Amino acid sequence: GAVVSQHPSRVICKSGTSVKIECRSLDFQATTMFWYRQFPKQSLMLMATSNEGSKATYEQGVEKDKFLINHASLTLSTLTVTSAHPEDSSFYICSARDYGGAADTQYFGPGTRLTVL
Amino acid sequence: KNEVEQSPQNLTAQEGEFITINCSYSVGISALHWLQQHPGGGIVSLFMLSSGKKKHGRLIATINIQEKHSSLHITASHPRDSAVYICAVHRGGSQGNLIFGKGTKLSVKP
Image (cartoon, rainbow over all chains, first blue to last red; front, top):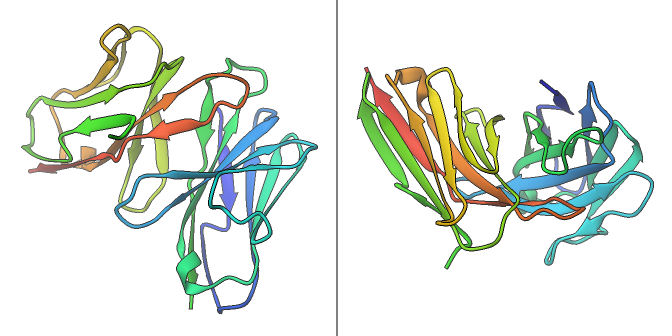
């Protein structure tokens, strides 16, 4: 089946630094990718929808200047957490919509665990 | 009330038992996903279905669109099935974002 990778899988950083997370679709083109965040014992929450070649659409309550999303190609979207703070510590998961598949086909990345000290 | 409700929230079973996890939703959907999340956090998509029934190994998923209900069954459960199982519905449209249930934490004891 289709594969979505994320890098890094884990990252620990100091408060105030920026962290970039990559999401790649390895064997299909994804015009749309989604970024989710999951706090402990909570369900996944959609942060933003990333569209190749255009600006991301952010969910209510998600700061677009803090969580920068770039979807420069059909196989890569990046999420940059700027000036990270301990409250940004979370599990970040991306998913990708298969451009050539049905509209409802989404594949999930393995996630990135961010810890901000 | 959440748009996607799962039951039970927690489930403990003995190895070999037949397990059922339920998902009810209140919105119109085009598809429903069953996802598995292991303690390490990674998510695996088990099924995507929009009607009827699908089977993969010991896992069976069913959906009743009229009743807005889906079930995930695990036959001959095994400790390695221990995970959080998440139901997510797809409202369709060009964007295609999912609405997630809170998950069911399954623990299978040897």
